[in-house]
Length: 146
Length: 146
DNA sequence: TACTATCTCTATAAGATTAGTAGAGTATAC
DNA sequence: GTATACTCTACTAATCTTATAGAGATAGTA
Ligand code: FES
Ligand code: FES
Image (cartoon, rainbow over all chains, first blue to last red; front, side):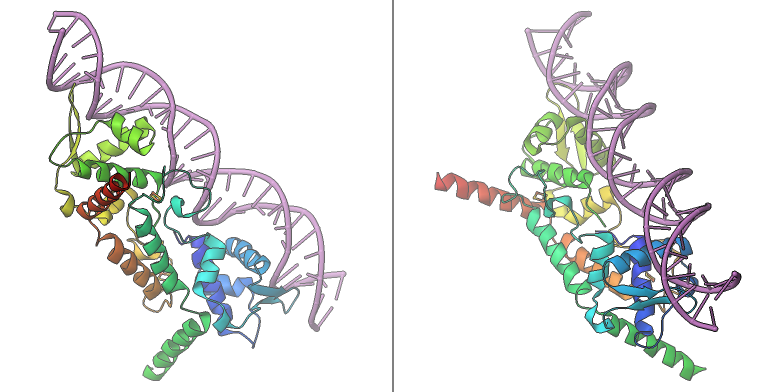
């Protein structure tokens, strides 16, 4: 289990779109600029997210991307798993593993299962509405303090 | 954070050596055979573990590998970190990351920190004496039931 | 001493993954 | 019809993973 830059970019894009959910679309250009992501790379990520049913887009002059589902229905884990694959930390927990002679006797197996659960418990319990709220709060604090 | 085959092999080797701790050395050949690991690959892993101060070896006819420290002083996390590197799930938690403009405002950061802690809490709380005991117990149950 | 078992060290390599880059094509608003 | 923005496919350099190959060093023993 590793969050690649691709996954990182996807999360940031979805968060940025969450902040605009229901109000407006966001262009790849703006997303890339705001989050400091190579634009051509972000293109690919967004297309993947679109194919995954997370976002949709409109072409043309006032085009851009927008979330399909409301932010509170998208969990961090959804994006991570979709972009970077299973969160299991070791091959033996995934399908088709034949490394351990008898996985039922393997002393390590339950440890990796615990690790998987622990990770799931975190990333499947935070949705993008919560994240967006946190960001808004920080913005507000910043505004007040100026 | 991903446990590679190399890490997997290292853990299995250390567990096998834990079972023999204080009584005898184990040859690469036997280790490789028991755990079904390519022998030339295991050689490299054991050399690395030796350089890391986890195991030591004796050459010659009655040679082989043995643990340097007692099993209860070696945690799974020690081996994992040494062989597969930091357990952090994303680059931004490691040194020299410059991706996020301001990591203190990044909404994701604390999540990855939580994930790191959760992983550490598991792999740094199991030592090889405990693992070896579990293996011995399973062996016993097996023997009784025959 | 010669032999053999065992560890030691360095080099090489195929395949996969990662993190991009490039460029031509399609749709839409104005 | 043109500017703007998304779409799609291909390519690439660098790195990592998972090994394999082979010569060398050391220790016990007949
Ligand atoms: S079954 Fe996962 S390491 Fe053995
Ligand atoms: S600081 Fe880690 S993703 Fe922003």
